[in-house]
Image (cartoon, rainbow, N blue to C red; front, side, top):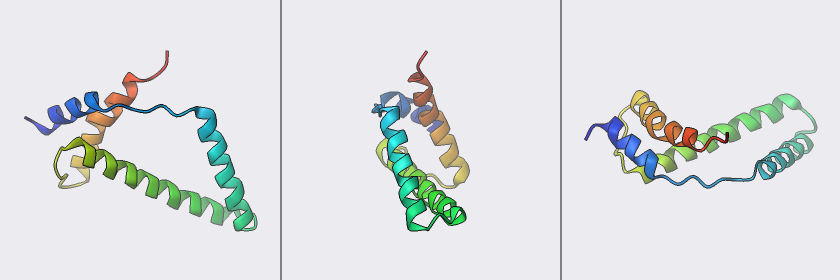
Length: 98
């Protein structure tokens, strides 16, 4: 089976748990407020920390997705991006409201 077909099948099987948008907003706001306090309102440092956190969260999400999808190892960035776009985004668009 081709990797793109396998990714599409995996995306259909993956169940996405929905999180309340207000909870995410409040949590993010609390994190930003705490970083502002910790870095004494040095917004360049706060943005740098938020960037690091976002990068690390993204890496963990990708690793978790690839581990659960049983698609095998991706050889390069292009393989990884293709796998995510075929399975991850297809699944995300199926759950859009409206």
